[in-house]
Image (cartoon, rainbow, N blue to C red; front, side):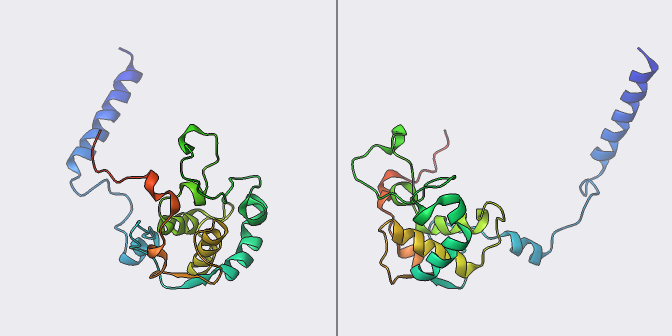
Amino acid sequence: MSWRILLFTAFFLAGCQGVADNTSGYGLGREATAQEIAAWDIDVTPDGHGLPAGSGSVSQGAAVYTQKCFACHGQEGVGGVNDRLVLAYVPGVVYAEGMTPKTIGNYWPYATTLYDYIYRAMPHTEPGSLTAAEVYSLTAYLLNRNGIIDDNAVMNADTLPQVTMPARELFYFSDEVN
C-alpha cells in the first residue's frame, strides 16, 4: 500500500473518531432563534392554519397581477410564457390524461394552498417578495377569474378557508404509507 493511501486512511479515521466523540453535534453553526424560525415558518395548510393577518379584493388583485404576474402568465391568466392559470372545471373531463392543462380552476384542491404557493414561490424572479395583502389580492383575483368567487369578494384568513374548489373531488386525503 502506498504511503498516500495510509496517510489518507489515518486522516479519515481521525476525522471519524472526532465526529463519533462529539455528542453535541458537529460543532458548526448555532441554534436558530425563535424569530429566525418564525420567519421561515410561513406554510399554510389546507384548513387555513398559518394564514397571516391581512386581506385583499379581486380589484386589488387585478392591479397586482398586471404589475407582477402578467409578464409570465399572460393577460388575465389565460396564457403566457409560463403556465396557464385560468380554465374552468368541467365535470367529467379526465384531466389526468394530459389533454387539458391543469389550472387553478380545474385542478387546484384548496384555495388556502394556492395562497401558500403564491406567497412562497411567486413572482418567479423574486419569490417571497409579496406582502400578505398582495397575496390575498392575487388569490382573490385568480379565484374570480376561474369563476370560483364573486367580483366583490374579499379574501382573508376567515374567508379563504371557506372557499370550496371545484376540482376538490379529484383529490382525497390518505395517510397510508405505500
